Every structure is written in structure tokens, then in C-alpha cells.
Image 1: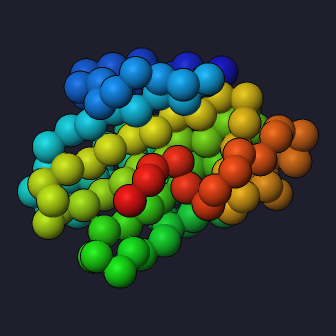
Image 2 (image 1 turned 135 degrees about the vertical axis):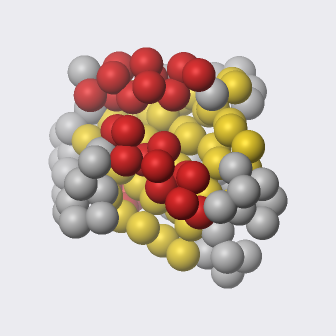
Length: 116
């Protein structure tokens, strides 16, 4: 249910590619990290303090932010240097970092939704 709300929020973003399984990707041009954080705040206003949001800083200066939910995961890839924000929404599965939030969901192979 919460992921359905996210899908409605990001529906204004441009679909990046066709979805496989219950996975969909969306893309939006950005120029600052704050713009990407604003997208995340639409779904999780308390994302900076929520235990269900995990921020990983990547070596290229980008951030990978997982919003773990009981029915899946929303993963935000924020890359202002590359001028892009991408959101991956996975329903009925999760990623390893979200295992505690959704213990009943199957954990998807790989540590992120986005291939770099």
C-alpha cells in the first residue's frame, strides 16, 4: 500500500526502462543533492531520522538511499554530478539492507536495485 502511494508521487517522473517482475524505475533530471532529497521527502518526510531509511554514500559522490517498507523497497539513486535522480520501486521483495524491516519478504540478489 505504501509503495502504491510512492508510485503515485513519482508518476510525474519519466519511466527509465521497462519493469521486470515487480520492479519499476523512474528518472528525473536534477542539479543538486537537495533536489533529490526533496523527492525522497515526498514519500518519507522524516527520512533523515527514520530507521527505515538507509543512506549509502558512493565513491562517485552519489548517494543510494533505501526506503525500507513492509511491502517492498524504494531506492533513490541521487547523482547531481550526472544530473540525474533515479527511483527504483520494488514490490513484494526487498534488498539485503532492508531485511530487518521486511523479514517476510524475499531478499533480492545483489545489494542494490541499480546496476552501476
